[in-house]
Length: 284
Figure 1 (tube, rainbow, N blue to C red):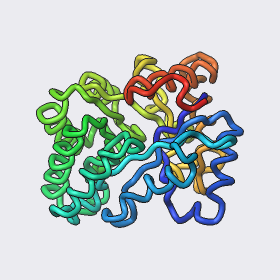
Figure 2: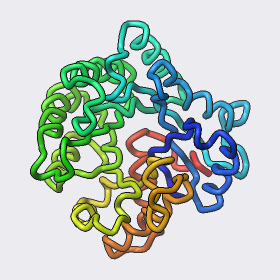
Figure 3: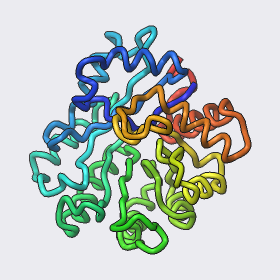
Figure 4: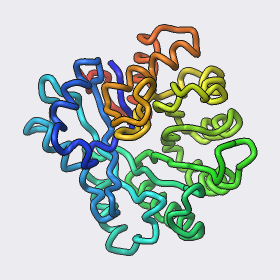
């Protein structure tokens, strides 16, 4: 079984064929999806949970021919200026729901500066408090100002300052989503209890340095994802991504590490289930 650990299934680009997208994923061996709840506006962060309930049986069981769905909820860095007491109360409510197993994606983005940096940092800390209350792992988005993670470390430095003081002591852990940092940044994340998730950009022609990092990390720290509908893997870069394509990222990761795709599927699934304390048959 493969797990797509990060997909924006509530995105409008799936509005016409969402069930077919899920069916194609299941046909490719994807047994579980983590649907990300951030919404275009933060107040709509319940969209992922609504889809979990739409595409599950009456008691939350997996529907035949479709992957099992879980959800997250959180305020994306660009939307942290929207955080107020009402929004934090909604996040608190959502993280109490059994289908919502993670808080995210949350974090820091200095590439776009969609919100002032101090507001991003404050918003991250506020959400860590809510996630800790519910013992939910966090899904971290971190994007540096430039494309070189070795030369542009400010976002990562600010992130780790917060995580190592405010999150690591909880022992809850989380996922570094769509990882694009350096080897040292990956190692530092692992030391703080995070899994490292690779997306379709791992397959891009110019991603040699990222593939090098992926080949050096311990296998019990790895996940795969699509980050769909964005970051479609080669050869479909620039097109709409979908969860079936996570198999391509897994195949690239397998080639980098000199193992079979089946090994990556088995190990990444085991890692995901361990982090979220889910039973081994949850996607079957």
